Length: 85
Image 1 (tube, rainbow, N blue to C red):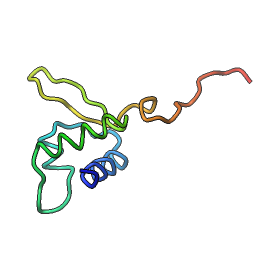
Image 2: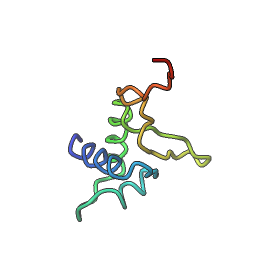
Image 3: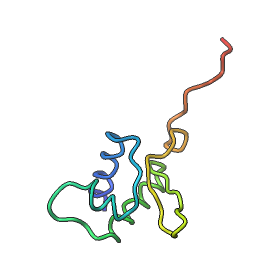
């Protein structure tokens, strides 16, 4: 599962605007000729979501869209907007 999670994490790192369903992630984001099951892809996405690296958003049909999590959720501090010196 870690290998699959790393592969998805690498994809969102190099394609920060990418957002897709589990089915599209399995089909388009993952390299190699042997595609993992949708169950494994979803489990890897859940792992990344629990780590704050991806976020999921519901669609009207009940599926989810996954994308890179906003910076504030990844454990890194967002840039300060405080103008005081």
